[in-house]
Image (tube, rainbow, N blue to C red):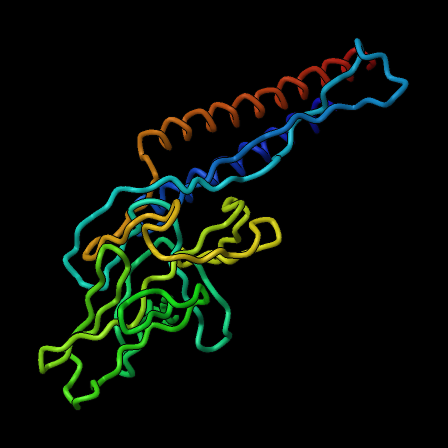
Length: 270
């Protein structure tokens, strides 16, 4: 039995090392959120078992939690590099599948059709506004800058204000609001499904997204010309790496000791 108990420990240590290695590998990944592993003990007992004789039979991985703490903000100067100074996720929609993705990576650009997109072509979402710039609905739409305005002047660029207003500028000096950044929140963000590229999707555990504009309620303001960096603390992860290594070595030693005891018993019988 001790072999299997220690084997569980080895597998758990290997999983912990994998989680830490992934955190370290993404220490410089924009918008990345680190993970933490939680263990739970396993016991062998039943209703008729003497509680003073209950024996543990190892441990198991209970969960791998995501930590959505705010990472450091780095200034880039690019108008469509965005960071949320507080809570909230940017929303993006795939033009191919129609799926909605959520991210803290605010690295966006504008394509030839006037759509604000990420590096994979997913379309940045904003809340529609009226002529005065007031939000008219909490249902997000694609952020699209008309390539010419009503007077026929050519589009020259986009700026994003602290309150999330996305403003298109034109050659004749006029400006046009194309929406306000749509920020999403979730009842249980740790239940979001990681899908790679610093993107998440909602699940039954996280609950559906709730949208609002920056600065409303618990949502943070928008920092234009900035990107949120990974929230991985390298020093903290290195300490965890050493602890996980000792955990692995201790379980390996327990297996070695159990092997020696088994061999001793075999030798006695012979």
